[in-house]
Each structure stands twice: as structure tokens, then as C-alpha cells.
Image (cartoon, rainbow, N blue to C red; front, side, top):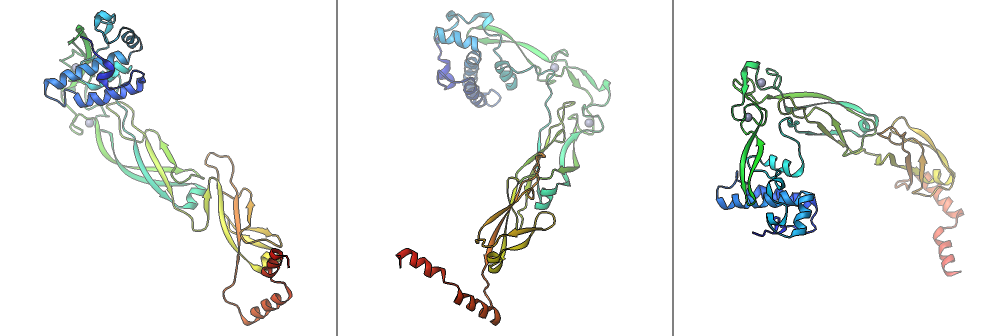
Length: 363
Ligand SMILES: [Zn+2]
Ligand SMILES: [Zn+2]
């Protein structure tokens, strides 16, 4: 009864453990007896589980590879070969026994994480702020403190596993009969059954609650950043810990400032006269405006750097810079007096286009 375990899982001979795990998971979902009533699927499920049990175990896999697609005569069968082989009462048990999980008995599921999207103004991102958010979540039931029952007399030992949380059963495989231990389905491995569930939460230990939370948003936070608030997610299973809350921060763009890391960019108009003669101009920053010197003969589009006038680094590494690009504004409307002055200026100064032509043609 030679079987090609690689073929069964549809993976290459050199497939990684991760690939094997993935292939198995996919097939196991497809052929899981909980989802299929026909015997063919159950057979198939056994087959892929068997293949995964061997290929996911380094030692068994090495033996299998050495002896080909052989059965127990190949050297790895027998009672010692397959303690890991699991049945199919609980798909999580199978994953655990194959891929090295922990016993379910003491493992309670942590609550799910939650996500909340918040949009703040640019200034709030620059200086930090505090926002109150409100949302619904499943919280620990107050009545029973998340236990699902109120008094100790409301629980009894699970009769299906006699309080051990696990049941053993015999599983027939191509290599013989194996005794296998699985989580008790009736008590989910708790070993106890609730006789009188808490009326408030019907024994789930959780109830829906509207929650208000104050969120501290640090100065320098960037658009798309995520803030994690530990323990503010959904309540966990029974006494297990709650999940986390992830706040995704969106920052509204500023009308004038553009952000690039911790640096800020701004464009400021200056007059022709200021550009030619030089000037001291006022430049807006995130706080109060500051004076900046524009040297005589500044070209339009020149960028100046104001150190430390940018955004605060969210991790506390100081401040970025403010990059100021000056643009010469050409007036569209002139008074009679202005026009006269400009015409006068045009008369004394050679036109740049003329000298350019001369340079080009050597005239
Ligand atoms: Zn039980
Ligand atoms: Zn309750």
C-alpha cells in the first residue's frame, strides 16, 4: 500500500514546512468531516491527515524520504510512529498535534483585536491631542465576572471526560489501531460543565457594551500610523485576556504646509523688487511666523531651509526643518505710476532675451 504523501497534499518534494502546513490546512478544510457527509471525503481527510502527520515531522519525513512511499515495512510505522496522529473531532486539535501547539486544556482564547479609524487635523498631529472615541465591544459580563456562571455550585464536573478535559479514542489507520487523545467537545477542554448558566450572558461570560475611551495622540503622528492600546479589544474566552485596540490615525492635509517625514514644505510669494534687492520676509510656521532673509538676486523657485521649524519626531528625535520655496509674483494689475516706473526700468536695463540671443548667435 504505497502512498505518495507529496502527491496527496499536492506539494513538491522540496516543499517547506510552511508550504506543507498550508496545503494541509486547505485540504483539511475542504474535506473536514464536519462539512462532508460522504464516506469518500472522510477517507480523503484521513489520507491527507496521515500525509501531513508524516511530512510535518522532520524525523518521520526523513525516514519516509529514505524509504520511499512505503508503509510500515519501510521502517516508521508501528505504535511508536504515530502518536501524533490525530482524529477529526476538532480541527484545532489536529493542527496542534501536527504543528506543535499547546494543549487546549489550559489555553483560553484571547479576545479579538479591534480597529478604530480616527481623522484629526494637521495641527493636532503636529502638537498631539487627546480624543474621546466611542464604540461597541463584547466585554466581560459584570454579573458573573466573565465566568459564565455565578456560584461554584452552578458548575459540575463534565461527565464526558470526567473532568479531565480530554477524551481518548481509538483511531483506525492504515498502520493499525492507535489510541489518541483529543479535547472533550462537551466542555471544550475545561473539564467542567455549567449547570446553571449566568442569566445575564447565557453562560458566554460576555456582554455587549458601549465603551468610551480617551486616546492620547502623540505629537508628530503621521497619516496612516497605528496606535495600539493594549487590552481594550474584545473580552477573551472566560478569564482569558482581552484583545487590543488598534487606532488608525488619518491626518487631514494642511492648506499650506505639506509634510515629508518630519520636514515641512511651504511656498511663499515674494515681489520682483524683494527678489532683486533682497528683503526680510515673514514666513508662517506651525507656531508663530518667523523672519527669513531673502538675499539680493534670489531666483524664483529658490528653497530656503529653516532648521528645527518642521514637524516634531513622533519618537522624540527632535524636529524636522521647514523648507521655504519663494516664488516671484508677477503683478497682473499695475497702477499708472507703477507702469511708468517699470517702463523706465525697462529702458535702463538691457532685456535678458536680447543678451541671450547675442550669446546664442555670437552677435
Ligand atoms: Zn468534558
Ligand atoms: Zn454572565
